[in-house]
Image (cartoon, rainbow, N blue to C red; front, side):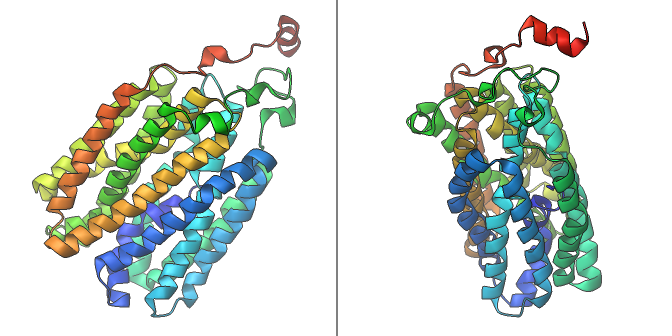
Length: 407
């Protein structure tokens, strides 16, 4: 379900940027505003979607909104020459992405199914986004060159109808209790409330740790979105060919895969804030390379480092929220955290475009975003120990274990 979601509307936006500027005779800031609407409107509705997921389960929400997302992509064939139509198109994509083929509902499902290997499971389920972030920009570039940007969007919508929706409808389950199991699959169910332990939303929203996380997610999202979504334009401005710039976007996709799997594997073994510092620090170095003006010779290195941060972000958010606040109101808390992530990404993308339009260069905004990433790394040192670590999970009785093992 995630293969054609964020990879189309987020990771490939930079590939579509210049064709859209040419089509609508608009500035980069004006086109970037489409992505701003994508994130802002989606983010404003996401907390409500999180509460809905807590009540009715993720499966129904994912199926309904993924279908709408696919139909909107197909509707690109009928977009005219008015830029307002592009704004409507991206607004609806943002609304449906966040709680449909996006990370929040899938993160909720995985966090209920896994406890001891939650980090790795979050990384593995995000492979769809990583693979898509690698392949979709390259496919987008070819489709745009051959048939135009409208056909490119529609082609991905058709792929979702034929591939994503049938797979999700067939295999996705909300919770291990639906199959008589406890988290980590191998353990028999003890009680229906076992996976619902944790803080209520009223307590979470009063927690200083929660708001510290929100600040960190805001700073990192703004910086990473600005770097990733403007990277093709930034590189071509520096003399890099369009094909090589698209390849840099594909390298981001490769590093997103490394970021997802690497952060997931490490989260199960080390303290999560330190893992976050590692990956966000790598992203800050990538932004510094772009800021230094050496992007033409080091474009792929910079793309890889920025992608590491982008790839780890979603897993880190889900893992931190679940470990510090539990699963009782997880979808609601994660919805608010991801809403902040989306809003910051929208603002960062817009500021990057506006900064270029004002300074006729990406130098100043890149410097600011590099500083923001560094600040986020420092703030992570303020997080204390987990409240809901692996050791707090309930253990099945010995007779239940014997029944599963056949003893």
